[in-house]
Image 1 (tube, rainbow, N blue to C red):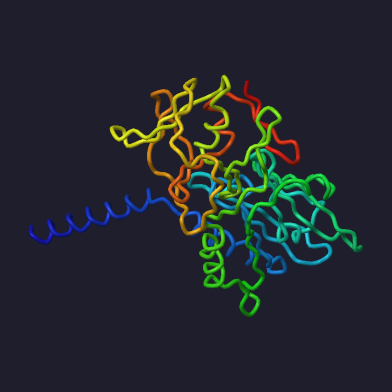
Image 2 (image 1 turned 135 degrees about the vertical axis):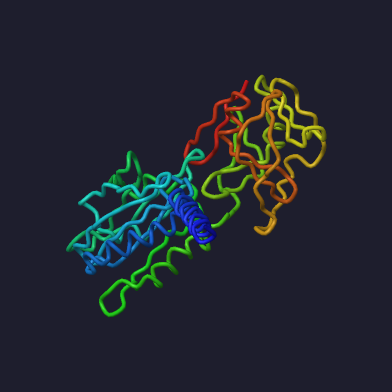
Length: 319
């Protein structure tokens, strides 16, 4: 009887472990390694890999291609939920286009532009790259279409040394995948776009953080304090939160519009909750050198003013 009981207990433990594994969530990194091992095994002539995050959701898209004048993209994929999803890729660009990407900031939006040399010529072509409905779209543009916009610090990943004796190396692929965050962690640079309110230029402290323009929220409140889109910014010790009250004239605390510079090691995501007119909202904000910076379009949505980009200035319309 003791042996039977022990066997039953062992079976129960094994079943529990197996059931737990059945519902284990596979990370995108492990899933990418498995998929890339399979793809490179099927056709090792396509052995270059590029990774970029066109939809800025934190999980990159991976593309496999061969680096030659006719080096088309053999496959593309990303991960949605717990499932690898295939990306439909165009046949009119070569994969090298994905290894030379410049990212521009237009009105707080990012524009990914790939650069390639056209097949069998020395002509340099530029493509606006977009991901829509699991399809990579490459639209031919002129460099002048985007050259007026500020460039965002961005590093796309590229590698071409994944084979050992003609076969894919899991270790090399794993090391490549693991290095992704090391070059795409939080980055910042001072925003090149100055701000105008109703045609008047203001010296507003702004930075590009992870591909988007962020401005000091107290600076924006300051320059709008005499408009109908004014709002006040405060800190609630009771809530432990940043509070924004729309329609209320901003209360000056000193130090607004100082234009102070910062260093990259003083940047962290603001984990404190944010309340707008008493309601908690989910916004990404950064604490930079002790001040709270918000995305300009998020501030516009909160306060109700209009914001546009004219190629040189962030234009705010508030009356």
